[in-house]
Amino acid sequence: MSALSTLREDICRFAHTLHARGLTHGSTGNISVRTADGGLLVTPTGSSFMTLDPARLSRFDATMTLVEGDRPTKEMPLHRAFYDTRSTAGAVVHLHSCHSVALSMMPDVDEDDFLPHLTPYPIMQLGRVKLLPYFMPGDAAIGTAIRGLAGQRSAVMLANHGPVVAGKDLAAAVYAIEELEAGAQLAMMTRNLSPRALDEDEVAALVAEFDVDWGA
Image (cartoon, rainbow, N blue to C red; front, side, top):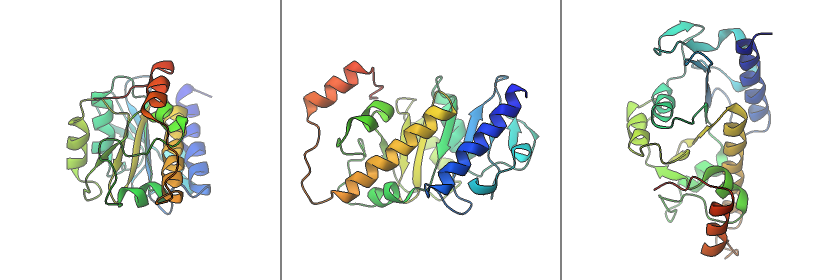
């Protein structure tokens, strides 16, 4: 099996497990992965993560021309924004996971540091998550907002919509967005219960030890 065929299968396999575990639903969510020739493989518009066909994934060449497959997700602007501003981005995953969306609607959330520092792993895998305002799905303004971060964040939360995470490869992006949703779930479960969060020194130690991209 060629590297491109393997990548197609990997996208569908990861997408299926995300859907099966309720991390996205219906025909929501989208994934893109950088190919060896500088192009992208992207999940098609209107497709379900449960039933993706590897042969029908949207394939773009290095000039971002669609050369094969179905029409891509309408969220291409947000995917392109991450690739254009983060040289390390090898994959981008966007979900409509419920706990992170719920947390994004809470009035006291820190827009510059979306997840409270309850456990180490969201810090280690995501750095600080930026909460962006609500945009209509597919709005090119989402891409503009991400570009405005100048590549300094690997993850953003779209208010009332869902998280978007860029990783060095597909597995890294999937694992990180799972950690984002788990962190949001903990935040919602412990809301108004005054949980003991990690203090500033503990967070700083994690950032230093694991070389976390903390962003500006």
